Image 1 (cartoon, one colour):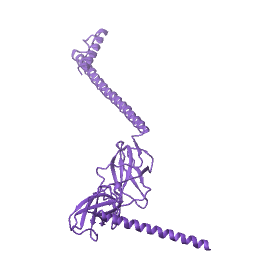
Image 2 (spheres, rainbow, N blue to C red):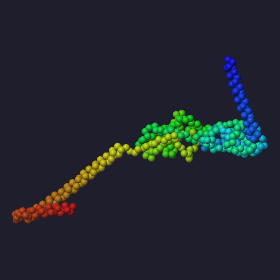
Image 3 (cartoon, rainbow, N blue to C red):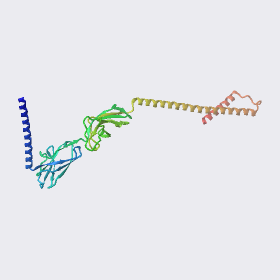
Image 4 (cartoon, rainbow, N blue to C red):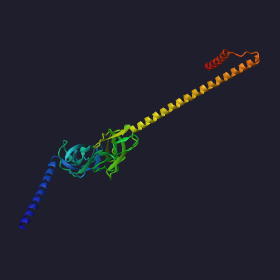
Length: 337
């Protein structure tokens, strides 16, 4: 029991000594700072979370500071205890304003000090009335993309692409919406609200054509308040969408149908030509028959006029010559047609 009490007493003495050392160091730093003309100031800012490439507004105030009232000196803005910006402050001036276009490396703990002399940048300064933590979030968050269906489709189909993130998303104050971009070959093609509950969003490319083939990726923007114009966006990965043209089977069917139509049209044309020739031939036959009948009537009339008794029976030669003359007339008539 005595051993336990002894160890507890030693531990308490050790803690007390550590506290005394810290207080002495702080007092020494304060004395050193004031001896060198450095006085703590107050930092004010309504922004705690800002997006990259946006403006951070900070006010450094010497109200309540122990600096000489009529002294002219410099206000130094510090990040993580080191000077990053500075401005000259006139006598009796209380507030000094800073506007910083922040990047991702500008996040940290900010504070302000006043000094009679100018301090170089990156100088370590310990004294400050208060500290404000500033968090800088990226303009966009690279996301993972995947197909919600087959990666190879044909023209006219709809394609679904899923965009998701695994990290927690943070948005600057005043912006309540998270947006996501679908990117094709480095160009933004779709903008869709991001589902922060499911931590994913689905893009749909409707009625795809051959020109929609390419590499796709996606990103998530912390809020719609951020302008991504002119920003090179890229996702964690890319997928390749292949849009195919008409299937070979459809091409074969189309070719067969075209061939059958050509054969059918050719057969119809041949039948039409035969019908035309047949009609023309029948017309020629009717004209020839009419010519023969007319010639026969003429011969009968001639026989009646000369009288049947006085006429000698025509010889075979004369009859054959008349027949030849008749057929000659038919041929001449046909040639004239």
